[in-house]
Amino acid sequence: MDSNYDSKYPVTNNAAIHNAYTVTAISEYLKSALESDPRLADITVIGEVSGYRNPSSGHHYFSLRDEQSVIRSVMFRSGSGARFLSDGSQVICHGTVSIYTARGDLQLYVNEVSPDGIGALQQAYEKLRKRLEAEGLFDIDRKRELPKLPDQIAVITSPTGAVIQDVLNVLTRRYPLATVILIPTSVQGEKSAPEIVKAFEVLNSMESIDVAIVARGGGSLEDLWAFNEEIVARAIFSSNVPVISAIGHETDNTIADHVADRRAATPSAAAEIVAPDITELAGQVDANASRIEEIIYRNIHDKRSYFEMSIDRMNLRAPDVVLPRQKIDDLLIRAKLAEQRLLESSKNQLATVKASLNALNPTKILGRGYAIAKLVSGNAATSASQFHPKDKITVILSDGSVDATVNKILNNSNEASSTTL
Image 1 (cartoon, one colour):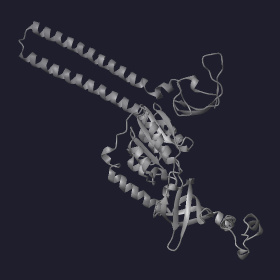
Image 2 (cartoon, one colour):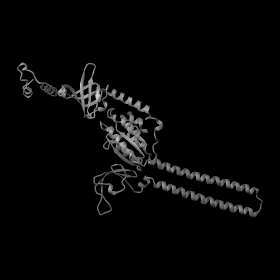
Image 3 (cartoon, rainbow, N blue to C red):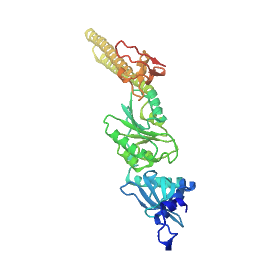
Image 4 (cartoon, rainbow, N blue to C red):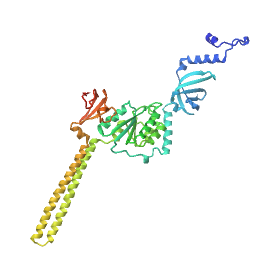
């Protein structure tokens, strides 16, 4: 030991033990020696967890062991990966080695825990999947039908990722009539699972939502792990509205996918599933109108034929006198006039229905020179007060869209307004 420790923690004055050091001196020396070793100051250790404790302080106390040795370990509540700590679990711990001088214990101070390989994560996934399946959370008969024409669609995802933009782009193109409401949350990391649960609580507090999409992009099994957490599965199960899950890529499979009412291969696919294509709807309206017109015409034609056959039978049975035949001719004339009036009335009603349906078609409206301004949130703007200078907006036209930036606002006063394309 060097002179610094001799001066800081002097030896006893008893001459018989002239070279003895205090317990504190030894402990502090060992602590300094361990912490000054760069290999021990940044070390990764693999082992099995035993004696795990998580008291009210929020810190985590446990031992790491293998076949021959044990080392005491502690991870304070600021560390990450605590969900992987349980007796018997095989983990990888990163941290530093030092001495806890109050007890003289050699300890591994852990700042991050991860499972020992994908195998451990897969085992945890299968264990939870089987348990929730046995509880009935995956049952087909409890899954709800998606609304055919949703008015408001909630999207639970990161506000900064590409996912929300993909969803908005698809819905703007396919079904601009819907309002998209973003409920932001993190989708990766230690805090993401509780945040996702909180997002579903917000969803359940909103009465006007028709359907929800929970989504994130692709990643490793560790990246997607929040969607394999039990609390997230139960939050999806408790949703007041049908839920479409779009987690990762098509080959990824999470607990959230099993619980959701519908699974989509990607976030863009979820946007296509959640709402119809307005162009196809317009085509269906036109086809239905044509079928209605055909049915009306066929019905009138059949009744006319039946009426003429009845008149012919009457002619055969009636006496050959002038007056009855004149009456029959009059009846035929009035019947033809009534037929024409009925047909004309039916055509007018059909034209009115078709005009009403076409008036609801945004494509027709846009074709007359109108446009839809979409805010950053993806919602259609209804007032100039919703815009702010330098806002990024999307202007929807009949044959495409234009990205623009707001420079000034026109609010029916003498101020000018313009956008930079």
